[in-house]
Figure 1 (cartoon, rainbow, N blue to C red):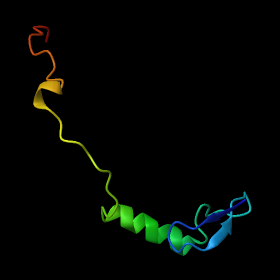
Figure 2 (cartoon, helix red, strand yellow; figure 1 turned 120 degrees about the vertical axis):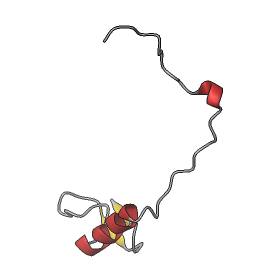
Figure 3 (cartoon, one colour; figure 1 turned 180 degrees about the horizontal axis):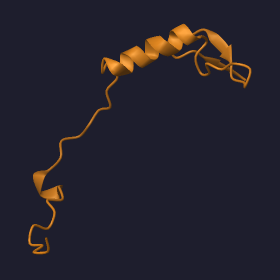
Length: 63
């Protein structure tokens, strides 16, 4: 099966013979890792309603 490298978009075979899958090379793998480390990838979040947040039970008297 062929897939596109997430970094350079080059077609690469998805198989056990490619130790860098889904990337085409160690270089593209490290570029992607660097982007994660620099927080370049973000997951969109919705604003939470404070009343929906679990505040926990602070009435516990056991120590």
